[in-house]
Length: 224
Image (cartoon, rainbow, N blue to C red):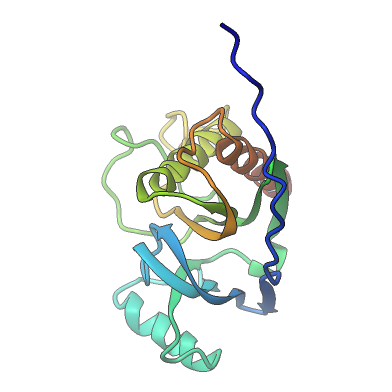
């Protein structure tokens, strides 16, 4: 018995495009309404809903003693006090962010990334150290309706692609780097077709992996 090919979902999803606001020290994505997401960001992370995604710049000597106070002050500045927001911090110039999109069947993924490679690490091999801003922050928007398990699986896809893109780069102590010690990943869902899974060979997995690969490759190529 042969399996029938996957059929594209022809339903048209009318969703306003996210508003991208770029400040000298912040990249802000306005999703118009709170959306389901999963995030490892230090503020507004977890399995939750947020309307705004922020990537906020801090000085290279940022000590991180009170991350919440730093972010709350930034939200006041951006006039987002009281809004549902997920925020990551970086010492990278956010005005040099990279963005790429990819589509598989009716699923579209768009990735926004800032990358700093001065704090590369290898989990379980790199020694314990104080947190330092040298971060790869990645925001992904995926047009699909997924159960929580599949949404969490998108984090695995991004992590695997990031490790692949970092192939050949070494930590300061000579280990194969798979990221930095302060990376964050956020995946938010926009209206789209139902997808039960988000593995490597699903429409979600392929679209997300392709967009992530392109964005990271471009970002890394600009770092000397």
